Length: 206
Image (spheres, rainbow, N blue to C red):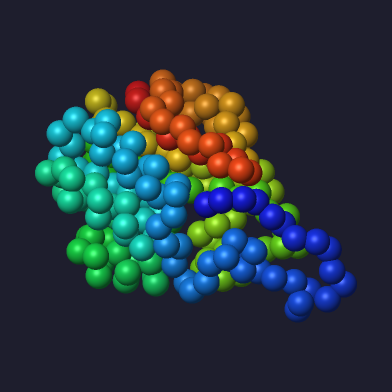
């Protein structure tokens, strides 16, 4: 996702650029970027004959499409954003409108991918639109990481793996500790550095 910039303070909130504008994106759906490519490649290279794969927060469905094209797995996407669900379906990805993992049954997937909204954002800089939901991780960048880790073990098969994109902006070691507290063993399988952050993909296994 590039650099983090919460912008300067202003007395007129109507003039304040949205987080999406600060990030140089527009529209209702987050489109593929360097974090998307890193997650897709890491998962594809690491997966061992998966049968059922879920991408949480699928956005445009690009990552899910890469996995579907490069493996023999049945790939499902989920997203709370109805515009994202539509785009992912247009790519041929079966997509469920869902809040994280809520509708999925126990032991449903042997691989689960998640590129969470991770940009730390002060409440005063939040704008209530779908792109903001795709970008903002709350004040600490972990707004959705915590509930995801609390529930993902339920949906994952015993020998399955979670592939979680983590930015240094969210506190890498804190995320590792949260995953371990949730009962996972963590392995960093790839990392790339950018001017304002380091992106990593963690493999989580039970």
